Amino acid sequence: MLADLRTQLNIIAALTIRELQSLQKSYNYGFAWALLEPLMFIAILRVARSFLKGLTPGILPPTTFIVLGIIPSYMFLSGMSAVMKAVGDQDKLLQFPRVTPVDIGIASGLRSFCIYFVLFCVFVVPSSIIEKAWPPDNILKVLFGLLALLVLGNALGFIFGAVRRVFPPVRQFVSYYTLANRMIGGMLFVITQIPSTLWPWLTWNPVLHCSEMIRDGWFVQYTSPIASPAYVLEWIFGLLLLGLSLERFVRRIPYI
Amino acid sequence: MTIELHNVKKNVRAGSVRLTYEDLNIRLADGANVAFLAHVEAGIESIINLICAADAPDNGWITRNHSISWPIPASLYIQKHLSLAANARFLARLYEADEKDYLARIAETGLGPFMDSRVDKVSGEIKTVFAFVAGVSLPFDRYIVTKTAVGKKAFPDLTDRLLNDVRERAGLLLVTPAAKVAAQYCDQAYVFDQGIATFYDDMEAAAEHFNSIQSKDKDRDAGDDEEEEDDSDLQNMVGLDF
Image (cartoon, rainbow over all chains, first blue to last red; front, side, top):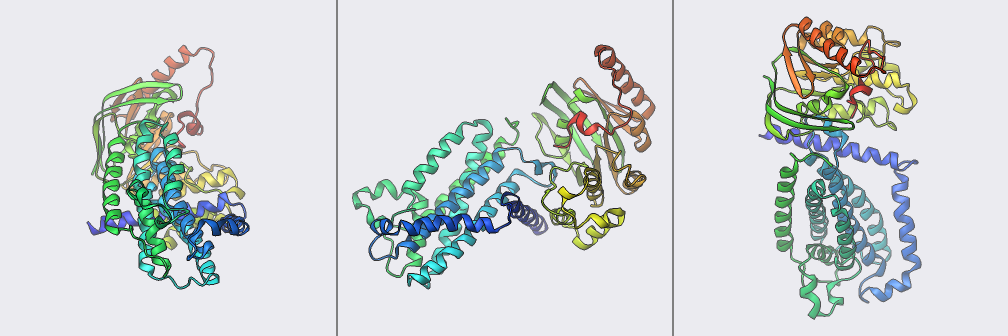
């Protein structure tokens, strides 16, 4: 049992390293491009700083506030779409008898997490030092929020990937979901900026809980009134169970 | 220690190939050297996918209780922007082999001078030889080989030597449209035709059956007078480099 588990982890590690190496192919000049792209994005944010000040709560430093919202949100969405693609398409690595779609899905999700975790460290640490929001108030809460987003994204990716095997147009729905989640997932706001009468319409979303946890954990000045780790764990358990079950169910269905 | 297909049904839909295998029963016994003799329309790629667990049957079940390679020398896993050594390290990690030993074994076959070269900087022949050697250098109970004429210019005896080594220490599953090549390495054969797999433990009988299918095909396609003399074009014929 333990040997099997170790083998499984080794397979996932090998696939994740391969996924990370394949980044070098996408970025002709190596990993530097992976950092340059978000740098340009941050530069645009700096230009829009005055606009951002209007969006962020007055007590919180604007750049750190925005970066803490954007990078985890992208981490979640990118992980979801990477896993969906890995599970929904017939990957060439499936020719290896010991590799399953689940391994490829997890490796794709981990690759995405690694990229965005590095970006998170690279951008959040300097911006919070400059804006005097360093050190984080509760790093464990921040890490929990990030890891929860990783697993939530992967679980949703398994669900959408499995559905995509039998119903490819689901991609269109996923693009709507992605757009909606950017609006309501707490990327650009905290819940205290929203009138409390609207909270019941927003707080069902586990992604919002994660965003709230991350900002709550980072800023001393902010305490989220809604962030609930237990609620997020319930969603993770339910979505993972559904996603892995669906993936197992559609394995016998030929790829379209 | 076998791989068995029990009453398997599989609809093959690969390009122009449209056929259905029904009640397919195949048994690959431990250590047996078996050939799959198949021509282009036999949809053999789908059967190999089933054996490799890359695809599931529409019906029936498959039992595998020994380790099996991927179709060698399939090379789609090779990343062109990395060196041969980096690609080999990926396989070593995937199959939990000792990286140093594994790389040394590959280098010993004559690929040593190329190991640190990027794949897109070496010739196609070296790449194929690497894919072949990397596959047979890992320990499996059964090796699926889809091409035997590999690197004949640079390494004339290499594949022959490695295949004989594989035959001695494990089982070989050779997928080929060349009955002569099959007889050279295998003792048993399945002949695939029109959704039926026929088993032979006599290679001459298998060759006779397979040649009769090819003759029928030639008669049918009167305009097509090309004949495959060896299995060097197998990858293109059955599209196994998936």
